[in-house]
Amino acid sequence: MKRFLLLSLFAGTAIFLAACGSNELENTLDWEVQSFEGTTQEGESFSTDDMEGEVWLANFIFTNCNTVCPPMTRNMVKVQEQLKEEGVEAEIVSFSVDPTVDSPEVLKEFGKKYGVDHSNWSFITEYTQEEIAKFAQESFKTSAVKTEGNDQVIHGTAFYLINEEGMVVKKYKGDTEVPFEQIVEDTKTLTN
Image (cartoon, rainbow, N blue to C red; front, top):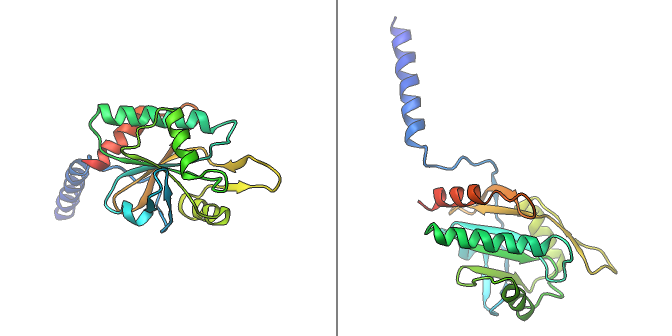
């Protein structure tokens, strides 16, 4: 009987603790964002270390992209607008996977073309192709490969959610069938 009571008490406590933690986002991924430096579209220095303590969304794009980057950028603009409507404060960072072409000025013009609000969205460049390829693979488990003689770059199309500790906790489709409401809800959960 004592064993039954102890098991019942333990189960009740576990249910209570689970209910108390219901505002926390379940981490479906557990990747640490590595330290990485570049320059924003405004010509200012950027480091992932500066994002410590911030909740942020990230993706990979390039301005000469003739397939997935335009819809991804439009979709992230929609995410940005919905976050603002919900009063959710989060940063957005788009890393260029074609740094030899994407200067700060080119990225600024690209953002302007798509209606990006740069108050909380930075486009990052000014590193080597090798550095962005390594960073994309190590931090986000995605590719960023530019083959010689080709102006297109093979790269992932996901949107990533990073928590205040610098861990990638979720990834979402960024090009088609984007789960806008889920992204906003998950981001809101991390910022509350």
